[in-house]
Image (cartoon, rainbow, N blue to C red; front, side, top):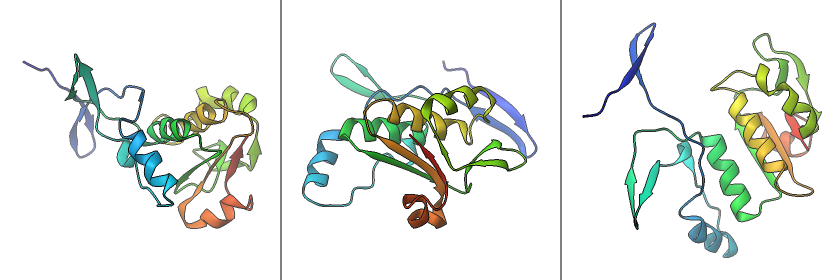
Length: 163
């Protein structure tokens, strides 16, 4: 007998489930193998399917895995040097709601101070993912920028660089 929680929204009610921090990507060895063979791999889409391990078996659970945090876990697991998170926002903003104070480049130490002010469920998990990635290895860099500007984001002409 499972109890579900709901929140009231404009259109009605929406069921809510936990969003646990992703611990690992189960298919990481297959992903590494495909990358090593020169293939482009699309993985961790939508955050993945949340499972728990009991004994030696996996079972699906009612939860949602954040796609940005799953991307960070995957990037760390494969030893990536860059993490790029694309969204509809052009930058991380100091005032995200009013789109003021675009941040073009910022150190992890500085952006961590801003985390408590960032909006849950939108930009905050993206910044948390970038922070978690950059902190895991020397020389790593992460970017957050607009999907339509990927080339400019990678050249430092658009988006936010976190180092």
